[in-house]
Image 1 (tube, rainbow, N blue to C red):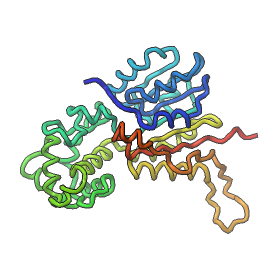
Image 2: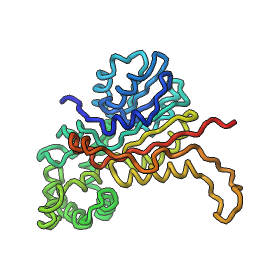
Image 3: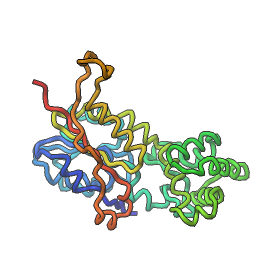
Image 4: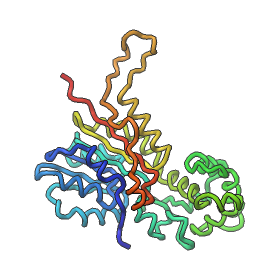
Length: 316
């Protein structure tokens, strides 16, 4: 299956990245190389682009798409949480811009064998973004306690019926191990009242999202690595992050704010004594969202939000 993915907020991201032709840029979620291609087009022969992705299919697709820029690109199979180490391995310690396009790609959703989609009946429960990982969604569904299933469906899926869904999953797996996306979807449907199923979106969407986020540690990875990525930026370098989930967006907003205003002194103090200095500024006071035209063209862009942070100018 061909790796296809419509890059979300493409023009906006490239514009906010403020690309310098001789600069060094990193895409930590390379995917099919849509954002990467537009970055590479704007680089001179002295510029450098590093693409990072943990999905082997994405690596192959992006390598083909970016082949005309082979003199200025380097593609690394890794998780963006290991960005500092990956860059140090090729002698890079500071960059001028970073892109993260979080969430799951269109290719991953559309390929039933990857197990991300609730629309396929006989697909394996996989959902691994990095297929070198041994633990799958099938393992998670069949081994997590009812309380843990409830917690992730409630927190990551924000589903009002999380408790009932968790209860139904545990009851079903006592009869038989849950093996396919279709089996899980049917269990979820039985846990949700018919009235709700008729009026809302697909009943399994939130639970599948929750399982994917938990399995791939998506929120932990973002939380644990964002400050480190800001630290990698050169003076006036920018990081552009596209999120698709309120919890992701909250993490980005919070860490951007902390990086801009790190002072921990009580408000009543007349001057700062903690010594913590601002690392830069939030460029987007409100998140940038897709235009009506983009949403019409690509419905999956509907929940996307772009936030941008710029590293401060050099002191002195």
